[in-house]
Image (tube, rainbow over all chains, first blue to last red; front, side, top):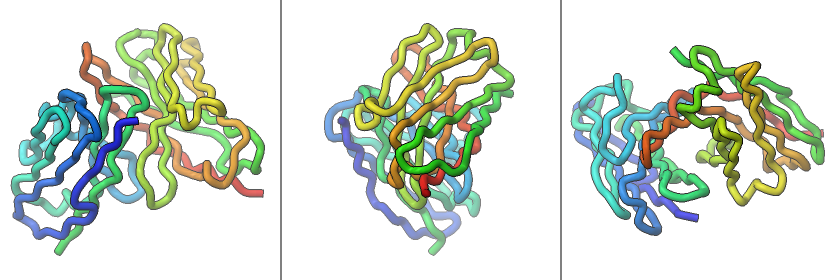
Length: 107
Length: 122
């Protein structure tokens, strides 16, 4: 299985901050990576697919980058509604796997 | 707007079979443009992909669950299903169904159902 390791696991930040979450794959996955946001008690919602393509309707402050084994999700200016847990997901090979999650909390 | 809704028993006894239904509205399962997955998430933990069904009938499972999981589809009802047998407390989780958008070699899961909590307990 392809392992995805996110860092950090917990990120404390303030409204207006620029934050970056990284996702490292145990083997190359080209650009077959998606990012999801999950709020408590809710289902995940896709933000980014193909590593850097913004899903329709997602604010432009979210961006994704990377290929191969190193990926990043950046939020350019945190808004109150962005405090949530973020997951990366690889779709290069079966089984489809997720990172362990990064919880973004208010400082 | 496509919507997915999971349904099924919220409580299953150990060693029995967990059975869930995902009802799809706003899109046709048989359109062939998408495939359909099941996921689960134990309380306070991360996401685990269970398996995916293509409308052509092929299915891929997570090897960790393949011996116990069965995914099927009924296009006439616009529903797909998950059965997981020989459950234990470790199968207690929120179960989600999703539509898998596949465009060539690119894919992502959207939308997700709201999730349904299944507890395994006697």
